[in-house]
Figure 1 (cartoon, rainbow, N blue to C red):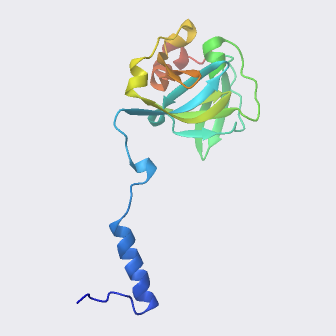
Figure 2 (cartoon, rainbow, N blue to C red; figure 1 turned 90 degrees about the horizontal axis):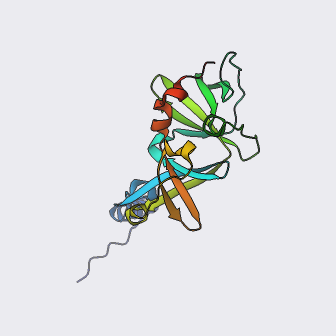
Figure 3 (cartoon, rainbow, N blue to C red; figure 1 turned 30 degrees about the vertical axis):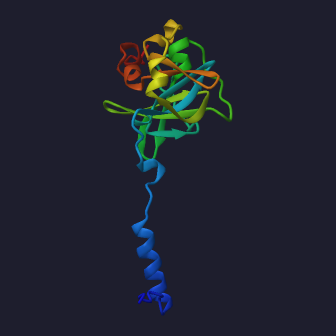
Length: 182
């Protein structure tokens, strides 16, 4: 003889639904770590498509209002107040290529934590999250642009685009990056 487990009240029905749903919870996409997959935030600086580890980019902002800091290099755009914290904002293209980034509606500031605080890096555009498999990374090529080679260890093909894996930590540790004063 089968046991009748049909809930008799609305409360019992909800409790039953909850218990059954908890028994069959699937992992959320951001909770599941796929083995052999490297994830990063894709962005563009001039004609360069770059991607940095998700762990290296803390936040993505539109260009905040800046206070200009006199006596600094041209790529040091100024200091912004981001939720009560002072963040130096650097023109990444200006720092690496010596050419100023033109501000557009697509321009964004990537906030990166470094020793002593955070720094914002102005980029032309943020292109979203990108994932690369170990197989793709095994076929990586080196960076041909010597200006970027110090920060891009390898370039990986994804679709029609060759993405440079950009190390934010190598950038913020470089001697010339740490010397923003003229």
